[in-house]
Image 1: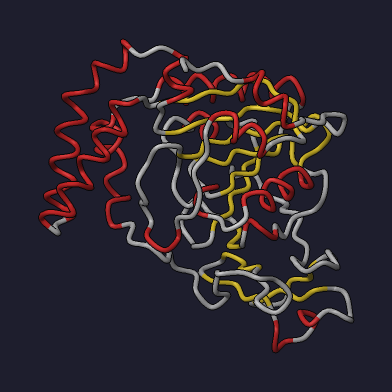
Image 2: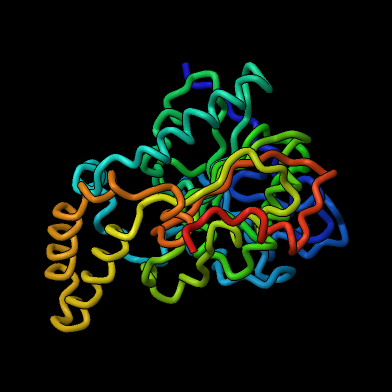
Length: 313
């Protein structure tokens, strides 16, 4: 029997009041909010509430659009994609660590997945754990998504979640600092956050790709969280193959040809990852990760970042 989810929806405006569900839409409970009227209702698309305020928030998301903004035609080949890319041991190990730590905090933890339109590679164990209550949000509807919203303005109650998983998302938001503040707000004290964000990668979602981070820059983004672990993954062999793919794309103007060449080179270079050191991944990784917990006593200073550097330079 499927567990009934009780998602703590609130209005994304600064009033942060509860929402009331009508037949096919939601309204804000505060009489002074524009979203208290039918004209500015929050619609429900394919049984998914779209809680986006174009009136009170600065958002690139469209409330009338429940579909993805970018081409995700290859998402149906997720298993093949995982086979060709290979297993990311670091993400899988970090997922195990996330699960182990979150179970210590609650027998039935509530976990928010930001950018959950597709299951992240290496995060499968979170979805398959029957003791977890998963709430998934994204800017478009899918079988995995519970609420369509903008991560800059999470329509979710304060201090509610035991953990937040945000994988390959922060590069696609305009203001990562604002999103991390929202993560901090919805997490319980000592709640966990795990984030993965690109470092040395080309643009991969066109107009909806904004930011890259080093390992220490990523850590400072989560400056209001205590550090449990951080680092890089997918080393120089990965971004070399990615760069080669984009080189072929720029020459042939063909995404299919470029993808084939990129995949072949990545397969050929994959054994080299076993020769790279952890220090190398601090300086030359395709992506970085941060694992930490909400801790209001933490104050990271700029000079602290120098001490945290573990690269080879």
